[in-house]
Image 1: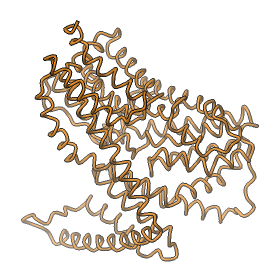
Image 2 (image 1 turned 180 degrees about the vertical axis):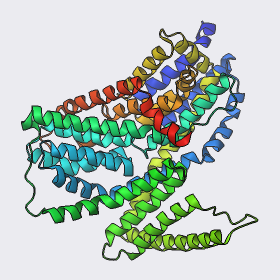
Image 3 (image 1 turned 120 degrees about the vertical axis):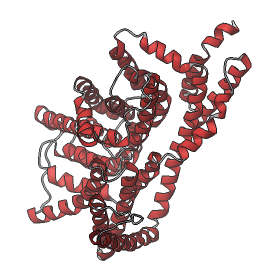
Image 4 (image 1 turned 30 degrees about the horizontal axis):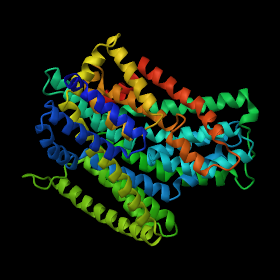
Length: 525
């Protein structure tokens, strides 16, 4: 009996993890606790080598020294700072006035703002809550169907999962990179072509924008088929053409410049995702400082221009000062860059002082620390779980299981996608990433699947985890701020068409992998 149980210890470990998570225990401590329990059980049965646990400190050190993961707290800081600086409120108000006279215009504006906030903040909870507070009452007051209003807001809020820069893509990029390297080693290739976060950022851009387009097409189609569900609204008499242009420029220019600076520097190859995250954190702080004292813009303008100037200079001029030979032009460029750095420092200090006096800085740093520590504790727990699971032979079991599924790579892919979709009913995206990807990633990639395409497929699939009833996080975020007349069933029924749209996007992406692979290969290969 015991010998028979030994063979299934790895499967029992995975099932125990799922049961404990569903019972509500914190995922980070559940991962680590389950690993320790089954590790000790395996040692007592003589089927687990304790040397696997000896590798654990090296794994933690590897996490601490992983430069890619430094982008996580920086992007979180950027997103929270932008959310606190009222960028979302101004965008929603302005886009609502801009599109409101069209049938379905408020729904279209919610999708557009959701995409802009996804590309600037990337924090789903903050986006859904902000849009729920600001847009939902307006949409209901203007006669929108509560189901359509709720579905539009919840779906647009989850775009931060797929549109870069996204915390999910940063973490998934690191996981896919590790899985790709392991799969290539198993195939005998000890110098595989690297896959990184930048590849996933580029790969997610076209599918993300296509998903926004599908949301908008649904809004337009419903507006014509059922006009009463999304009526047009009259433009405010105060919103004359010149005034409207000024408002649109004020609301859009700063976020767009920040988005282009962060994403553009990655896609053009000027900066790594971590360096771009640093630029984003500085830019968000400058923008917040500017919004608090728009009558005194000089320090912030000087810093913003200097920041863009430094990015441009470093892309064209070699700034290393330790070289043996430096030309006069390079000396001039280095001096100019130092002057620009002084301008950045001046504007940044002024902006920090403003957000500190407003008590925004304290709230932002606390939220950043809380979210970052949650993610990194999960990473550490996942590392321990992965070690013990592999020590019990779990990776071999997964390889054999996926390899025996009819249909080869296609069959294995369908099973894994289905598993992740179902897990999204109950678990958060980050939790699913650290449970599933390290286990099934190497096995899937051994079939020869493109790692970028696999990563984007997983990202689009995981986006549904925020929307799928009964436990989608976006649904709870919206429920917490919805007016009393909006019922839970309004929210559940409202998101169903958008979940179908996301599944349709998954099918399209599976039929046309070039949507995810073309741009990364053009830019980075």
